[in-house]
Amino acid sequence: MREISRVPVCRACLAKPEPLAADYFCAQCRAPFRNAFPLDEKGLCALCRRGVSGFDAAYSYGFYEGALRELIHLFKYGKVQTLAKPLGRYLALALPREESFDAIVPMPLHWRKRWQRGFNQADLLAREISRRTQTPVRHALRRVRATATQAGLTNAKRRKNVSGAFRPKGAKALLGQRILLVDDVMTTGSTAAACARALKIAGARQVVLLTLARTDRRLGFDLQLRDSNNSGSTEHAQS
Image 1 (cartoon, rainbow, N blue to C red):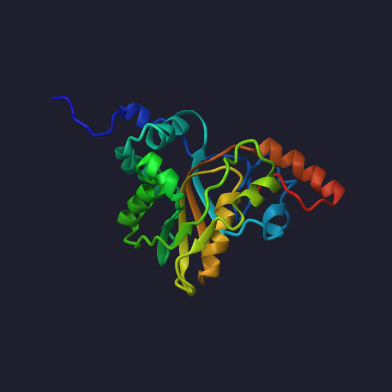
Image 2 (cartoon, rainbow, N blue to C red):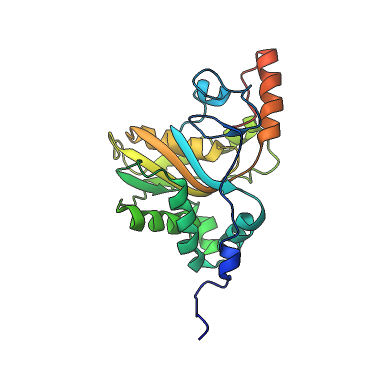
């Protein structure tokens, strides 16, 4: 008898995404690099050395390409919400077993975007991780203004675009807590950094970012970091 599934994707396609692999990673944000040049003696990239990232660590299952990108698009834009469970398995694989948290916070959508899509994909993913780790989900942030799409913006403009876009729902509501911030994709980290800062305003002790995928920007990182270090600029290829 043929197996019946609520997920309109065959097992072979669900098994295609490969875990993230690179020669070098930042010890904090896990940004991948082709060589060790951008990293200091502690293994930190320039962004993390300057404290721009906002979050304390970041984990992703794979690069935002190929089969994983197609599954995320089907989940997010095709509105196949039943993909949350198999994608949640990939999230769980990306998170080290020794990590523990007081609460899981999904990346909030602006109300208009959520109304248009019908759901918040980060919320569905957060629930899957909550179920697997027995950690409560807290909707501790609100997106107080809609932001322009980040695509095509410089890193400085990305940071400006999301600056002040998130607010905590209560003053010191997360006092002393270690928070897992969940989203589907990390591009430059600007949006996650803005969320992390808002969570720390609410009292969070640490914020760790967990995403299904991150864009592969290794060549851009390497080249721009080299230019930055040579010129003394404070800007970085990652935000």
